[in-house]
Image (tube, rainbow, N blue to C red; front, side, top):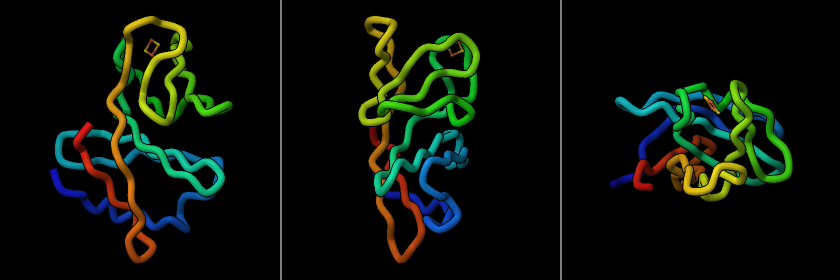
Length: 103
Ligand code: FES
């Protein structure tokens, strides 16, 4: 699948913050950590909480509802074996964030 334009400017996502963007039927949680960008499916696989509202530290986001912890890099869950959320490649083109929904 090709990269899709989120229309979100990198400058509008300061380091340490996150956003939810809608791409077709998919809600994506975007996280900016220092100079790195990460994109995960926004819906927690447990009960569907919005992961972009989770607490981020140590390379992971903690779900705001029941504290499942997902690695930003690949979506693997650190505290529930076998659980995972899709992770998507991210690029910045001319200052705008693009996401490839291929997991
Ligand atoms: S909804 Fe995310 S851990 Fe329950």
